[in-house]
Length: 432
Image (cartoon, rainbow, N blue to C red):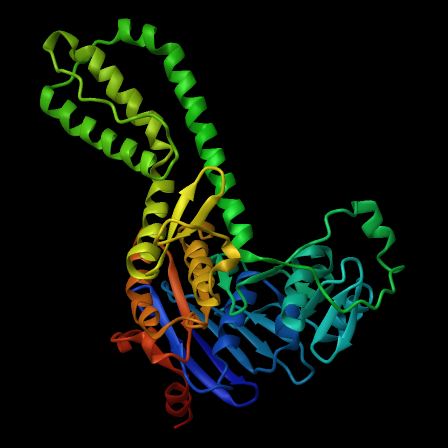
């Protein structure tokens, strides 16, 4: 597990020693220009093994420290070459800035100003950081040209990272109309000068995504139901074990709770089963019945936990005159307190920020992930900012994740200053 990161001469100025909090949340604070967002980008690039990023970043040394005392060190030389160094001092790999420049000239990206590049195939615009990440993911064959040597195996100790950036409400739309052969042919042929990318509203994309998630879960449930129902007679006649009345009642009550939740979210038209009368002579049949009922509903367990957290946070602690509802048709939808339907785009920017942020934390992040959140306070009312950390801690417990936040807001921190790392104080302490 990653326990800390040490950075020397970030931007040729700052020295930091950042220990991650055991509670699962570390909050980076400090004035503008101290590199809060850059620290997040460093962690993101490390997880992606993005040598392009470090070849461009101004720093002297970065040291990752793990629970077992193992370390990974990145050291930058005067010629901008980055060395990856093992704990024993052995140089395991190098990232070369000159190789990076040669690679970019061979790819379908054109520089339009100091920090922006355009993809000549799709007209999408990227800043340097996003471009380098895209190159790493889309053209992994060039990583070998940039990297001299083999990355150490302990790179695998770096957790999977999910980066929630400050720009959350719009997402670039890739051009999927062009086939692979066309993309290859246009690699050096396209000279278009358009400077605008296509974007879609993130909240609309996530509503569609949740709809598909629900659809897939219902399909799995249907398949399990068919398999169990088709074999029910045979298993009923073969059954040897029975069930006590007390155990049956406890398990059946839980089944009813799940059925009720599915009905409330509009995911099932099946009404709750009335409690079957327990009779000793039916104990074997009831044993088969309750086992089947639990198996049919188990597929909904994870989804229901996330839907409950998602809707409760928004309806009970965020929205006053609006509410969110889950829908098989729409994924999620909104209405006024008087029941009038609202388009997703009718929500304020602050409301959309909250929905998108919660959705990503609950539905797009896997257990064990290190989540990076840049400026969660954007467009949020002060009251919502004060509630954010309490809700985040509950999500962390549900999702089994760790989170690092970069923020300017004392309201986000609220009363949990014990979770903060002030980069201004950290820099001054390291400088003494």
